[in-house]
Image 1: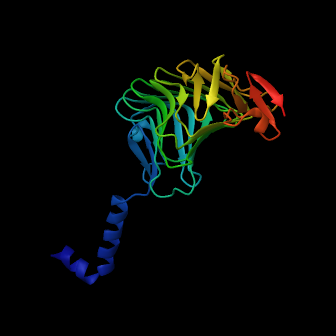
Image 2: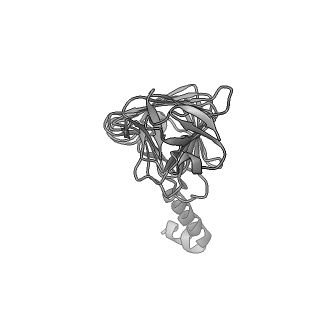
Image 3: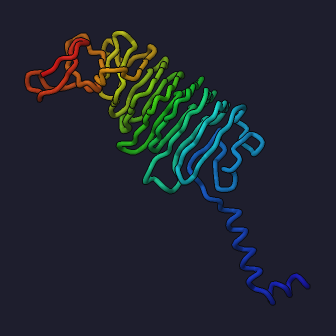
Length: 277
């Protein structure tokens, strides 16, 4: 009876309790999961196995909500049934996410993707990241038209799975800027993007590989050998591998549909050789 009287005498007490309950039931969502556990305003201060992120088996993981940056420091993330890292954006789609690499990091998923993203993601930093999936793509994007997956700033990534680095429907762009990428997949190593853009970087493997649209190809088919992209060292011009059929490519690896003579002035790649027109 006393407790009921308190509620009538002090209605603000009831209001405060309701607000507190609402906040508890509706924490702010940031649109990112680690091993199937969502990062929210309630737990982002402590992203560790001890705080419910059981997929984190080593190293350190931090998230800065304002910068939308996930930092991995010698992190080891391993999930059996979920994506190791899932970035999907809950509310704010005006800007993408960043993954900062420090030290050597490993992301593994047995049944899903090591990294699955449906919004822009940039992986950067002077660290290394290994992405691996036993049953699916190591890195998979499934976003809206023009979504970008970017590897930059001297980052080094390795991607291995049934599909290496893969886009679902040729809507997303894969961009490498002064970074190193190794990708291999039994069903395709780096493929199905809207386009692949190499900035201060170039395709070095496979020896007979070339970029056609949004895929790395060999002998007219999607490449299933190891694909290696490395930073340019001095020239700033990407020696992109060409198709043996004498097709014409821009220096960023884009195949040109027009005859060479009808193209505007510039630097092109024909049969593995840079030609200035």
